[in-house]
Amino acid sequence: MHLPRLLVLACACAVIAADPATPLPKADTADRSVSTALAVQTALQQGREYLLHGEYRAAVSTLEGQLPFINGSKVYLKALEDAYRGYIKELRLAKQHEDAQRYLERLLYLDKGALLDKSLTGGNAVAAAERVITKSADSYAVKTTPTVRAKSLDENQAGRISERPPIKDVSVLLARAEQEFNAKHFRESRLLYDQVAQTDQKSISADIAHKERWAYCKLFSVVEQVNQSGPQKPSWSELEEEVRVALSLAPRLEKYGKDLLEQMRKAAAETPASGPAASAVAVRHAERNAQGWLLAESPNFRIFHKQSAELAEQAAQSAERARAQVLQKWFGSGDAWDLKCDLFIHPTADDYSHETGKYNSPGHSTIRIENGRMVVRRIDVHADDPSMLPAVLPHETTHVVLAGAFGERLVPRWVDEGVAVLSEPRQKVQRHLDNLERCRQNNELFHVKDLMQLDDYPRNPRYVGAFYAQSVSLVEFLANQKGAQEFTLFLHDSMRYGEEKALQRHYGYQSFTELEQQWFQTAFRDQTAATRAAMK
Image (cartoon, rainbow, N blue to C red; front, top):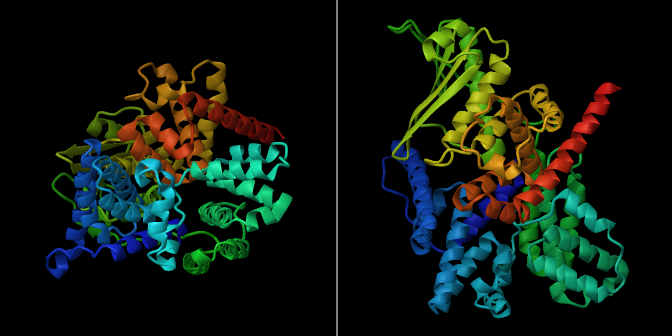
């Protein structure tokens, strides 16, 4: 179970409780789920369009209309958060402070840090906070829920903080901790509060505001750590203890803390020791059609082939598994496609080239979107490629998933190929990463800004290898910092507001240059270590 999604669901439920939900759309029982899914996607698309044109009131109205049915979608809630922010600012400018306060209270379910934004509170955060808090302690506890989208520091930044010489002046430390908290740098704020506690515990204990900020940072840190993967994740017992310490500092967060502990226990109980196993999907076979193709059909793919039924089933399982993994990793969840993807398995490379006009390629995908609607999903591969099942199909399936995930917009090429390569077996990913050093020596690497703003593949074939290597490395670098789903949110914002603004918002990089420096140091440090290990 993915804990951050649970937290988003809790936020969504709280918003629904604050504002009565719109009734379910009238539909027959058999069509209800399809109608609901289509209504949610339509609302999200319309909401995004309103946001692009600065029509915040319309965006709020549209997105709130389908809120009870979004199933915790982080992308949907992110759009709603942006809509609230824009609308609140409009209301403040129009001196409609009562309405602004009402929507601010809704925004706080999604981002507690909004209370510290003067443009949203009307310049008086204290008064705004008091109005929220006095509604009830339980209500306040929900509104201060940490979210995984708040800005935080990467591991390198946290390391630099700990390396700074200790400051003995507690007042200076507290001022810096408060400043970082106000900037929503919660990890850095926590480290500073920790340093104060080591120096003079009483200085925090005597101030309720500092205690509650410290507690919030601790809870935020727990959510971050739960969202990590790999051997460095702390034990569940350590995380539970951290939550209890936070609650001892801020009793008003008790209700939320208990809910968080319960969700963590459920997540721990439902997480398999060896990782999630992919379930086999049902495959239905049909007779040969007039063009000589046999058909095998799975929930999201139609496999056209001229080989054995066994190979068709293996292909269906590979494609379905890749689709599910991409949706889970980068988006948190995903529904079945209403338009299935046609997968053509050509017997040989010659057959593939003859039928498609593509040469010297293991496979390719074709996507066509008309009037905001997907009308073609297709993948072509050839069965004589030994990597067809483990690598080519996952790669091309990833392209198809990404193409349908952002409305009419197609993701930038560096993202499209970077994410697709990362769906392949690790040894194939590593081949691209190993190519980075050669590209650097040959002066073939792109500036990060140029890479991100490429419209298509490099026109000069000389730079194609560098394009792939750098795209894979950069996508992995950003995804490793805050998780794959935060990268997806960054991508969504970069396509709306520009890459540099999105980098500032999601990763704290103030410019392409700053990102390039951090990526470069990490990429070639890791590559040097990998090369040394291979030589031993």
